[in-house]
Each structure stands twice: as C-alpha cells, then as structure tokens.
Image (cartoon, rainbow over all chains, first blue to last red; front, side, top):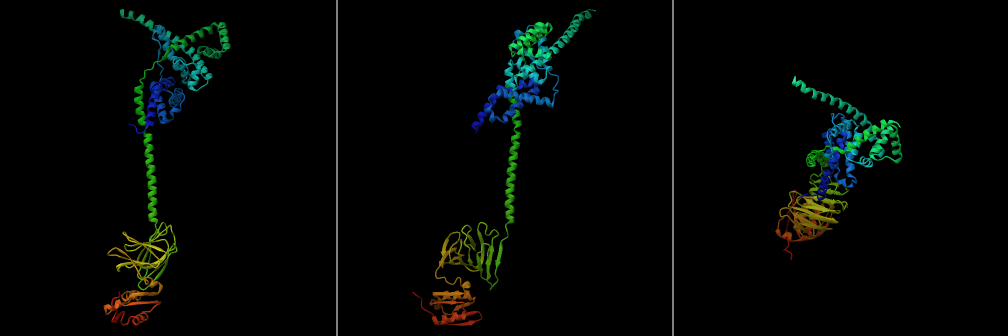
Length: 193
Length: 326
C-alpha cells in the first residue's frame, strides 16, 4: 500500500526498535526519577527524538546503550527543571519468590527501597543497574559511557549511604515495631475492660 | 585505612573488580577490625539481598506503543508547520515573481507614435538605427518594448523602410491584416486604411509578407499586394513606381495607360479621366526624374497620340486610343 517501500521498512524497523528498547529507556528513567509517569514521558520523548532521525538508525552499533544514555540525559534534564517529583521510591520485588522467606526479607526489601530512594540520581542509576539489572561494573561503564572508576565510586557512595541509612532505618523500624507490638498486645485488654 | 578506602574496597570486592593486592589489604584490615568486619558483613548481606531484587515493572509495550503513536502524530505538526512554511515560501516566491512581472508590465514604456499630416513626409530614425520615411497622412506606432526581443511597429498609411540588420531581433511591421517580417532590408509599404490593398515593394534584401493564411517571400525589385476584402496575397509584376514618392522617379516599361495614369494620379495627387475606354489599351515606356505632371502628360500625348485638358485638379485624356494588344 505504501508508495515508498524504503520508508515502510524504516517504519517497521522503528516499531521493532521501540518494542525491544522501550523498557530500557523507561527503566533507566525510573531509576533516576523514582517516578513512573515522569519516566514514561522521558522514555516516549527518547523515541520521539529517535523517530525524527529514524533514517539514520541503521548506523547505531549499540542501540541499547545509546537509548539508555538518551534516557539518562533526558531524565537528568527533567530533574534540572523539577527536582521535586514527589517523595517516591522505586518499587522492588524478589526475582525468585521462593527466596522471599518471610517477614525478614520483606523488611529488608522495604529497607532497600527506602535506602535506594535516598541515593543521588546518578548513584542510584549505577547501583540499580548493578543490583537490579545484574550488570557487571564494566558493562555499566560501557552501557552509560562512563569510566569503570566512576562506576566503582558510585557503588562505594551507595554503600556508604546504605550503612548509615539502613542502620538508621532498622533502629526506626525496631522502634515502630515495639510500639505497634505493644499496642497490639495491649489493645485486647482495653477491649476486655 | 580510612572510611572512604573501606567503602571503596568493599564496593570493589562486592562488585567483583577488586585486585588481589586490594583483596589482601581488605582481608587483613577486616581481620584487625572486628567492628568493620561486622559492618562489611552487613553490607554484603544488603548487597546480596539487593541482588535478589528487581524493579517491580509492569509495562505493556503495546499500550506504550499506542501512546507513542498518538504522541508521534501530535508531534507531526512540526512537519505540518514546516509544510505551511514551505507553502508560505512558495507563495512569497510566486508573489514576488508576479509583482516583478506586474512592474515590468507597468514599466514597459508606452508605445511611441510618429504621424504625418497631409502633404507632409517625415524621416524617422529608430533605436536600432533603422530609418523609416513616412509618407503623408500616415501613422507609425513603435511598441514600448521595441528592440527588446523583437522590433515591433504598426503602420497605417505608407512608409519606406530601411531596416538595420539584426538577425536576433526580427523587425515586424503590423499592417491591417498583413504582417511584414524582415531581418534587414529596405522596402516600401503602403497600407492606407481607406484603400482596398496593402502594397509592398522591396528595394533590397529579403522580406516576408504574410497574412494569417499565406506568406510571400519577396526579394529585390519585387512587389506584392494584399486585398483586404478577399484576404488574397498577390505578387505585382512590373511595379516600378511604388517607391516613386520616395525616389522621385517614375518609370513605365510598356505599361498600359490606365496603369500609367493610376501612378500619375497617385504621385501628383490629381484625378485623371480617360474620355475613351480604348485609351487604356495604349502602352507607354519612359522614365522621369523629379517629374512635373505637365511634362509627363506632354510626353505621353506625343507617344500615344492623345491630348489632355485640365480643369482644376482634374485632367481629361482624349484620343482615339488603341485596339487591345495581343
């Protein structure tokens, strides 16, 4: 039906590219922005930019990394304009639900969600790619087009913040736990009397 | 080991980029510092648990694609606007060209007119250095764009043309229904409105004399006429006196007297009547330079055995005449 068969192939290729890499762009933006909707805007915008130069897309030798970097830059630009997207966190889940052995792990999961939310955007992206996407440091360096040294520094920073934050969190969690526990234990007696 | 180094080495160890030397350093340090060893174990635990987690990500690429398709078409206005811009540009270009033409049209100089009164003749020299001599009561119109691509003039009346040679710009004389087209030559045109013919006589060069239907190519010494009523083009033979008004020479070569008298009437602007119809059968040969009518008529009277009487501007020819020749 199309008058221009070359254009048609390009459109088809573009759709394939979109389906393959949309989540890469979206997830990258989520790690930075901690906000699904804002991240979706960034991701769609990445592909609008790609759409505008769709005729040059065959020149990309690593589209995944290229798209991830575009999403990272787009998300950081979004932060520059509005660094208060709401007190959000990155929702996490266990890869293998069998590994989810009880409340201990659940506490840990929530603690990590909160700790990750405290990291700086760039640091959070590197840490997330390492832990939640399972990339090695050299892979992250290539993926984000940064040095391995930068990756290591960001992970070190993440760990530093993790220790203080998690420790703080556990103290807080313990405190709330005692209070709630006390309340739950105490409550029935109130009912009786 | 300071805190920073502890975290750097821990990060390297946990993410697997630690060198053997650093590994040894960290191991020794942790063995020496039980607190830090505990801290490291805590980090390692968090690290490992983190590794079992992933982003809780529910995304339907189809939905995203549909949204994207919508965004894409909203995004297209850029192109549409660009198309608008292209249209505007095209409109501007067309308008500019149009205005250019309009100004050119306005800028065209008005046609120029040369006219002669009765009894007056006039030499006209045109921009291309062609020379035209207008006979009496004639009107020559020079087009405003004369000499640009063509050399267009219009003639009502009679004129003698000496056209400067220019093969790139033909000289075109528009007369009542007949068109004369030349490159460079001299000739006479007689296109008097009231008269039934347009006549041309070529002195030198080559002339195209045409109507919408036909064309005559005339060369030196040839004459032609166009009859307005019948739209007919015809060659004139033995036409010597077309240019008489200009050359002040009358020439007759075995011409019948009706032709002789017609030329005389024309040249001297008089009326000549033949009392006897047979007179026109007589023939006359002779040539006059700067002639006077009396002189000519005397010569003819002797030659053709006729006599003439004058009354005002009117001459009457009398005599037995001749029997039709041939």
